[in-house]
Image 1 (cartoon, rainbow, N blue to C red):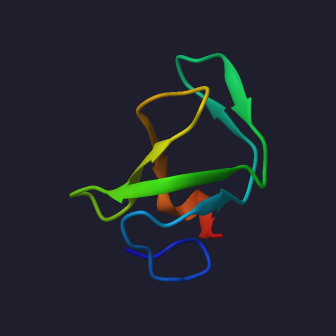
Image 2 (cartoon, one colour):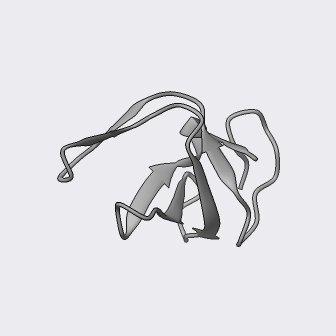
Length: 68
């Protein structure tokens, strides 16, 4: 799987957001540059599973992150 700038992503990588994203169901906005640690790749080629201190079970599209 590749990120927004075509870097190869792997499990347990750290990624940073490249734009502000509104989180559905949480009523929260994640700011650009927010780093999430220890991502997990999913079966879908465009979706990664992330952990954040404030939001559990967050899923992001690979097009909105870059490897930190």
